[in-house]
Length: 86
Image (tube, rainbow, N blue to C red; front, top):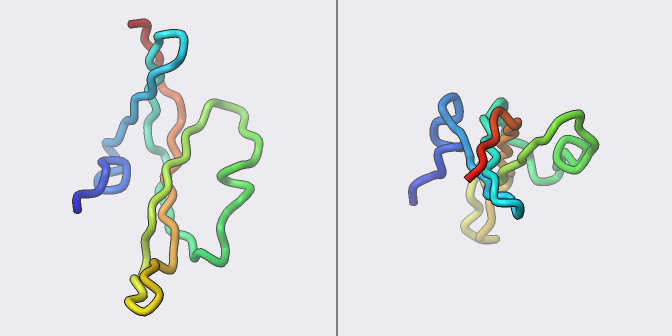
């Protein structure tokens, strides 16, 4: 399975989000970090922020064959860098 660019090559990653008003918001990945599942960074992901921020999450770390589960979350933090009208 191929990883999304935000996780595979975060230094070059940009994610586009279509807005309800027809504009497109462009976010650039600024940080990529792995957190153990038992230490999920709630404040980082759900806390207040001074600027528009996008958090992308996927499973990571070690895969437990018995539990069929990964032991960590990989979180990419992206910040708004541009917006375009369509």
